[in-house]
Length: 264
Image (cartoon, rainbow, N blue to C red; front, side, top):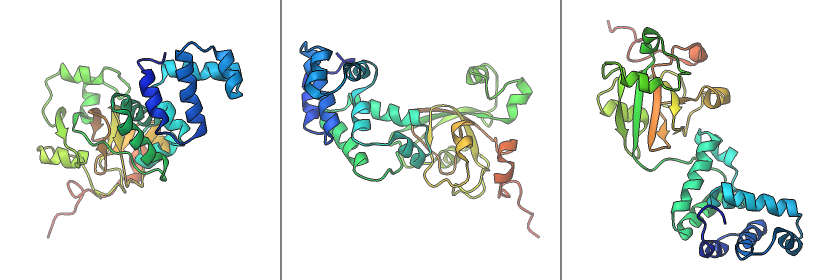
């Protein structure tokens, strides 16, 4: 049977789904657990044996709430776009519902399936590990280094260049950094420039309200904006002070920290 899915849970899910295909999917799982063959199930439900085999394979490799969410009409891509997140983060978030009570998980899925996609925001504390981009060239490091933060941990860097802090629910990354004594670059504080841009190396960040980063910058470069960014994972690794990279050249504004004209 599917991972650790219990037949009683499958039966309980039946009372909380709306789409006929979702109902059939659950019924197939229950019947197969009781010894009914894929060919008999295909005959019962008017589907091909290959399709039933695909369903049974899905039960083995995918958390049940993800399969149910997809069949109940949740568009993972649209939700990712609305949240400024990667699709993988959205799928993993729904997968994490497998550890919740069925009624609670079903309520979450119903809320997202019955309304147009809205941002998916993290509601828990997140530990943010950060590294100043300025130190990469000095040590011969690259943003592509998979062990970048391990290298940083082995070097005696100042707190400005490397460290961690806690982001509490309701705080943006920039707000949390400032409250904990860090001075990071910014300008608009509203998601309309790239002065506060960061590169995420592990974890993910929701960005409700951002209007400046392109899809390519978000999905391929893994860029996020600290001023509107909300951690969507319990741990987050990012490189800050990347606003001077050529990818952001046309997206910067004069900074109130460094670019403002002195008062006369």
